[in-house]
Length: 101
Image (cartoon, rainbow, N blue to C red; front, side, top):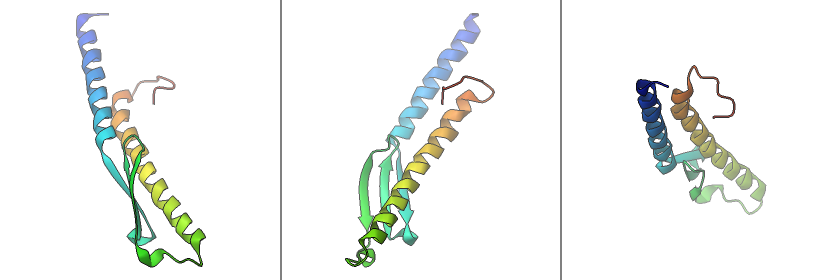
């Protein structure tokens, strides 16, 4: 492999590591029920915080609250996946490397 190509590959590797680190340090906020429930997750999909507006807490309907929390969690995790795909995908455009991302 020629030296110029090696330099390009090494730069791409450094850029990929940097981009991945930025995603991992980012915070994503998922919401449900018009913002009545919010969930904060990191780029590593660790849930850091859940906020529940007291008005959605109904002791007679715990299942609804559970569903709303799940919606907010899934929204936050979907955002992590979308950001990862859009950021890391720029490195693999035009490349057919099965299983890379």
